[in-house]
Length: 417
Image (cartoon, rainbow, N blue to C red; front, side, top):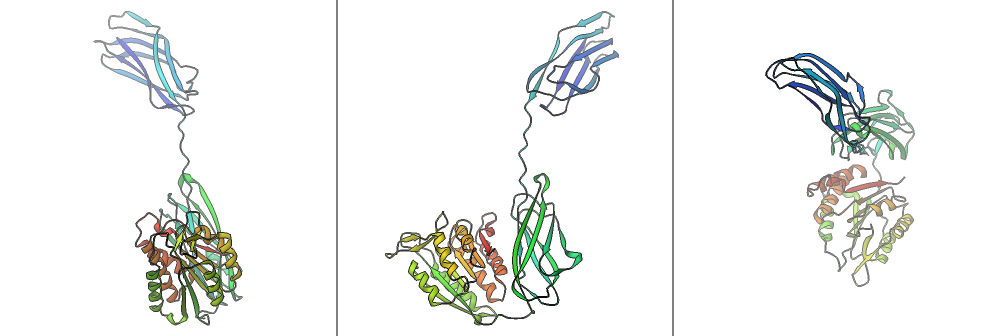
């Protein structure tokens, strides 16, 4: 006897699939003149392939298969039938089967979630280049996303000549959390303290597509080896309200002093401090000194406000627009502000509208991690590194004490547009 089967796996709407027609001889002797006509439902039309099959003979225990390509149109359970299925058995007697039916299960289309596009940051490590001679601008591309960057390119523009061989540099395979250095050779003919540098990066990461990012930075153009005259005053401001968890601000200040003392350029730095910081203390300290660096250490609210102290030592959240106005007034003197407090990125971004460099924290940061960042940052400054490179050093030092994934990206550096 001949048994017919029609099967299919993984039928989905609007996706090409294969239906298998199988004829098997379950008898003890050969069967002949096997004829099978497959009728598909309108919801599962055939794309190509013969739906009428003729097999002259089939030995006992043997089977014969054929395939039909289909593309389902609607989800549901649909019947494939045959009213013309016939054969002759081992005795030569004819058989005709008119009620053959097989159920085809069609599922809804498979929805593939879109892949996340690559995410990255462009960091410029060069702060000064020579005037009138070929020099290099260096930096790094950092993959801060969850997808691997598989391709990319980086371009540089500015008021200088760029080596024609290096106007655009290619970027290679870059897994999440990894960094890739880049270098451009330039010739700047006009000196300046804040020469604009425009960097444009385009990166792709598999099915996530590509993303383009443009950043503007500034560099100083002068003669190599030129040192900035005068000292660098640092104003260290600390607030430790009585109604909040106590943090080791005295230890942080001590470690910052030690970091500065250990540097080659230790004599260039003078540090002033004010503790138990109230609003009048902030404005008075900015009047009393002429700091190029203002370091604010303490607590921050989830909404981005820094917690100063009230008259009784209790916490007093300071307005972000208010602090921005205070620092706008001293923007001609203050070059860098560090807000070493939790959730201070919003405040840092607001201050960067007026101050050249502002550092904040994207999220919560532990007491020891915050101190490690400060130490690494000031060690780099005392070694003669520019603020951008000092920021990277501080961020990496902080990661030594924080095991959270991508913890070194908690500190964020904003630059004045």
